[in-house]
Length: 229
Image (cartoon, rainbow, N blue to C red; front, side, top):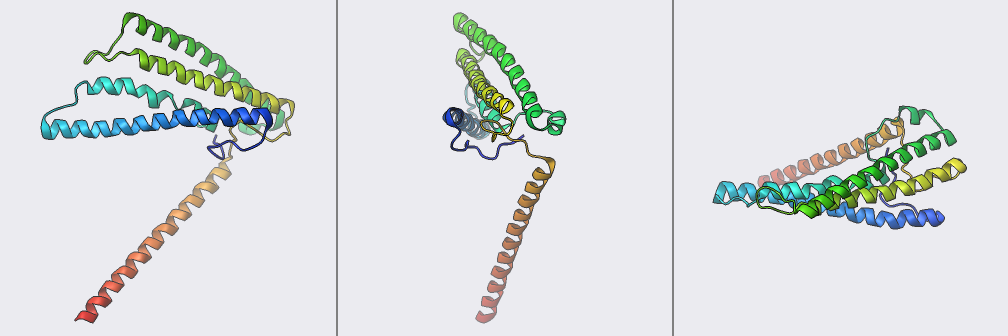
């Protein structure tokens, strides 16, 4: 299940406005997650170089990774829900059309909303426990409460996205012929295969141009050497 664009379309009244406004927050959270992925990658390279060449490993490297992992594991889940990127089975959904399909989608989102509500409560209790007892990592004793609070914030962001989607699917249940808004659109197997074929054809075209360019460059080099001789 994929969306047509990473940015919601214009229009749509109050629902469209809420969708676009909240999408900016989701995009920001996703960028933060991407930054920390890059940061951990660079820290891993630095750790290897420092350990192998200088004999000076980064103190508490494992603890730092443990604390930061929650950023890229959790901060992007609301964005992924908006784009329809979470893994799911679509055998039944793909066979339905109109109001029946929107009803099933609404049911699934409501179930997810209830589950995420309980997860928020549990993550908040874990945060409060870590805060109250001063929980920290084993090596360099980094406080664990920021990462647990971040998990609660990320789940709350997902909860708000699910709430927007409940609103959007309820609108489609009432008005099944209305244009879909604030919901990820399903692409059929044929459409996905067609897009993949187009991408493959484009890559083949780029590769062919690169080969032709190298061939012309080699030919020019041979001609210049023949002129010098």
